[in-house]
Structures are given as structure tokens and as C-alpha cells.
Amino acid sequence: MDIQEILKTLPHRYPFILVDRVLELEPGVRIVAVKNVTINEPYFVGHFPVLAVMPGVLIIEALAQAAALLTYKTLNLHQGDGTLFYFAGIDAARFKRPVTPGDQLRLEVEMTRVLRGVGKFKARALVADALVAEAELMCAYRNGDVKPEVR
Image (cartoon, rainbow, N blue to C red; front, side, top):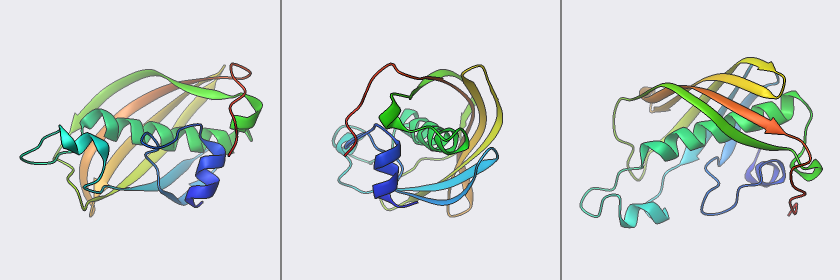
């Protein structure tokens, strides 16, 4: 899945779209996606000026966006029908090492359960096969909240 299909699926836009490409997607099972981290990301201006480090909350957000892509494809949903995903919980989040400009985040998300509008996921982010972050995510989805413009 390239960036054009990602933009047709997710409602996020620059500077908050945090998935650049999907490498693997098994509906109902797992997704592997990437985020290319570049020095011109807007948050690097202040985080931190001396040593640019990607904020951990944005690594978690990138994992959540990958989880949303997996769920959209698993349930055959589309942002154009008004379905949106929201964070409902984050458990066991751990950060192992900083992510800096030039890194490519590999986002691996496994769907563990979807029931009554809530999905649970095991997620991890890697750089060059080294674990940088992991968490258990819970996302709720609602249909018909909004009719976003599809570009």
C-alpha cells in the first residue's frame, strides 16, 4: 500500500500522517508498515534543538495509525463512510532507545481482538531490527461520526 492509498484510508494529513508505506498486510492478523524519519519533521525544531529525538508519543501514534489501517482493511471500512478510529487505551508502553532523523521506523502491529467497536493490538517499532518501542494498544472505532473529505 503506497502513500496515496494510505491517504485514501486514513483521515490524517501532514504533519500528522505518520505512516509512509505498508509492506505487509494480512487482514485480521497483522500489518507491517514504515515511517521514514527526516530532519524536516516539524517537531524536531523543539524536540530537541541540540539532539533531535522523535517524541515517544508520536512513535505510539504511528503504531496506532498502522493499527487503524489494519482494522479498516480487516472490516472493509472506509474513511469516506464516516468511520473514524480513536485511542481508547495504551498499556505496557516501553521505549528502548531514541529515534533520530535518518531512521526508518518499522511498525509491526498484530490484531489480538476486535469486539463491539473496540480493537486490541500488540505493537512494536523497530529501527534496523532493534526494538525501539512497544505497547499494547486499544482503539475504538465509530461509524458515521464525520463525513471527511476524501482527497
